[in-house]
Amino acid sequence: MSKISDKYYLGLDKKYNFQNKNENIKTDFIYVLNRCLQMFKYHNLPSTIPQKELETQLLCGGYTGIVKIGENLYSNYCGLGGENDIYDKPTMAIYTIPKVIFNAENVNGDSFDKQLKIDKETVIIDNDSSRIGLSPLIYKYCNLLTETNITLYMSLINKRVQTIISATDDRTKESAEQFLKKLIDGDLSVISENQMWSSLKLSPNATSKDGDGINDIYELYKSVKADLFRELGLASYDDTKKERITQAELELNTDTLYPLVDDMLDSRRKGLEKVNAMFGTDIEVELNSSWDYRAFNGKSIHDKDLDAPKDDEEINEDEVPEKEEEKPSEEEKEKPAEEEKSEESEDKKDDE
Image 1 (tube, rainbow, N blue to C red):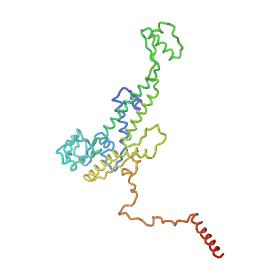
Image 2: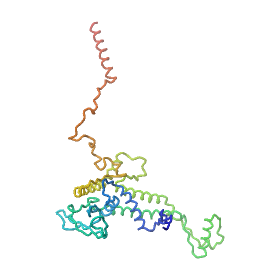
Image 3: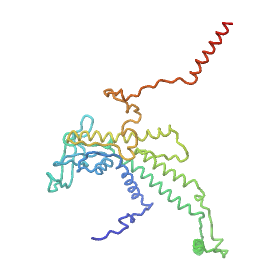
Image 4: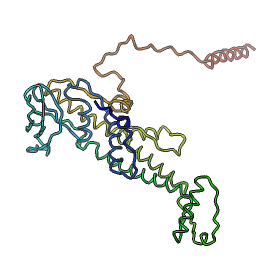
């Protein structure tokens, strides 16, 4: 067996080229998709439906179909068609799987080409309410990040040039190149010819003096990346000009994180309910990783009565702490003493 080179094993052959826009967009997309694959955690999934494949189909395709072939369940892309129902939704799922090798009916690896009735013979699980997936959203931000990277890269290169040198003839050009080379090598050199000095023109680079330009581009890059993470339900604060964030700002930024993730979780749970009812499974899904840090795991964070007992739930009176008797304060203790003294003084006046 031939030995694989270390550079391929470590991925060292894949170098970054800022000019290769399509490859950079694709790479950024894969990195973001790897994060999104950790968004949900499934329980009791059949061994024939790997979670990675199921989530990839949902995130990239917007939906996937659950079909039973032989004795096993599988998830696969399918076309939607047939006669639409009253809400203009398709009623048929068209599966075209070129080669399948199963332990049941298709032992010989025959293709699986069938049209199945949705919600009667097969189940469609949606990624979101519109079945659009996350690919358009991720691609949009990856494109913006790639363009911003190119601008930042070119600004850094231009920052190196403090002065633009121009020559009117080849001899002056060669002398100027030798002069710069000696400076780079650490040798001090002088220009001895008056003709070369008169043929040489020096112009200051205006972009090199713009110190705030690179900072603005870098702030834009961080802002675009933060917006991407917020769209995906991850808190990311890019306001570097503030030392502190108020509670109102924190809550405002937090509330915008949840709607898309809630919709994706709800769509998966509705689809799995149909799968469990049709095929007798017990598959569950919940938020995972950083998305699971939010309160109540998918329920409203504003529902403050989640920990309160329900209407049909009994309350154990033994566990309810008794209210302690309020002890009088020092001022209340002093008031009766002062009243007694005033009464005694009045009695003495009456006696006199």
